[in-house]
Length: 426
Image 1: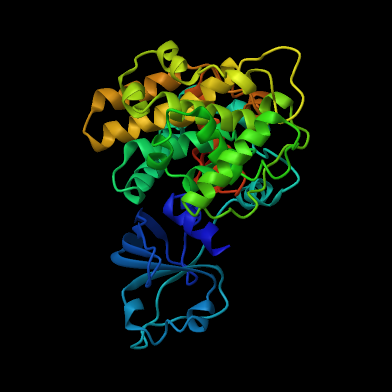
Image 2: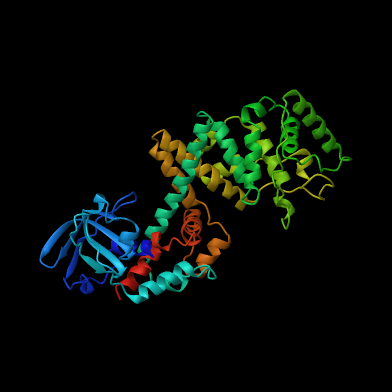
């Protein structure tokens, strides 16, 4: 409740004509002040007119006036600068440490505001509580917010890459290898894929880049797939033999179970083929980062990840019987997801760290040029009237859903703020 009151004060959502102190003096809020996120009064340097006097100082907000004493502000000189105490319930008079009475005001806000706030935040049974009011918002306001969200998500991904880069002492190729592995997990197996890549450093694998079998043996062996694979499969026997050799030679420690998921999954999406593709990309290209940042256009970037699987994995989804025909490893939509989650963030991170604004712009352009993702989040917002025409927009919607809607941070969402502000002033 107190956070909601702070929000109302900060964004001037009070009904100004109803503002009076508990002793009847008119209050005008000239400047609500700066929100304090540390110890001390809630708002610094506010300007309020109380009666005929202009006050410049701090504002403290409580649900009950008696919270002032409960929080022991009455003996704290840090609160002597408070010029107005804003409360929901006026249950006591409060004073400074020297005994001076501090002006106190009950927060006047539309009852509809409180009702709508609780509808947005507390209705866990509704996926998108604001859906019926979204069509009322202007397209300009909506576009502006989605643009900010898309950039927020892209910069967050670039920031993650920068963190990995520090972890790997500035090794761009190792960093790219790890984010590529995670992206190839396609959400369902992203964590196991990332942990597998981290357990097998790229420089170690590159020592055996002349042998696809050696790299696959290391990956499938460390991933725990060879233990349950059919022993009568000749290729499994070869990989198992190679893995045992490397495990003994380099003292490789087996990983804890990585929690691979395959239930209710189409064979095309089994992790086996994703690992096989990762092994193929590692073996075939030692300068993946350079290729990504130098490639221009969607088709050129797609070509980097469209590495065909040959040999055993051309006709297998997993270990065991072969398929009747061969399949491409990645569909067009799956390849585009790699461009969204690997290429664009990598370009943004590289451009940011090297001061290359043109590369940063290309990262954004890439998202505009890619088609929209097709998932449950995009569908949810589409049913509420927010369509998605490209990956730039779909990434914005994913960020909105995961970082604002699901944690119910409606107060920090521009759409939620717009809707709440309209209710507060009615």
